[in-house]
Image (cartoon, rainbow, N blue to C red; front, side):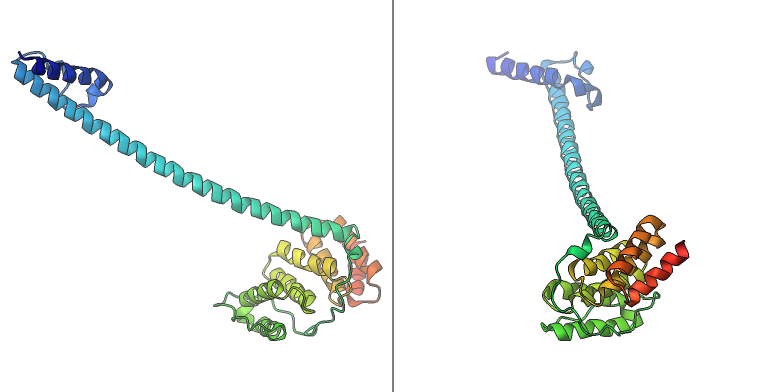
Length: 264
């Protein structure tokens, strides 16, 4: 037997030794190699080696597929965690706004100028609002866009569009004198849809940021109503008392006093 042949046979024997843990899964077990001519045994070893190579390739592919699945799940977990953090932060903001109202801290905020914006007599949206098909494109003019949003409020089939329009308005025109009205409408529209936490946030924003606006007494009163709806009578009473003391003579104060009287 030549030196090259012996070297080839030795290499194949070592390969078989390394692949031994997977021998039970191979197509031709090593135990079957032990009889016949040298050429037959070499052929058998080559067949076993090929079978092990295929098995290793399959295992590597499975590992790669599993890693891809793990990476995908990790991405989904991270996205879910981000969304959860956003919800928690929003809840914290809402609670801080409400606590500031019940403790009287909101009234200490500076006024934002004369906030006697228009459309205070616009009809309130009803609670049976339905989904719709897209808010109008903003014109770039605050007065035009505000009136367009009010028109959506008056259309009972486009209450969702009204919310979107006012949200866009609040972001695009932060210095507009319509800001307290826009936030008030966002509170009312969300309340009508049963989104009381969002409603409380917008109502509290009116009181906190625009305490001299004609909308402030009603907005603060609505925060008290939401607290009472949620069963928190202690906070509800505190808010009603703030309305009565800080906005005497207003309609909001009158309604708050009625609530206080009925609560005993």
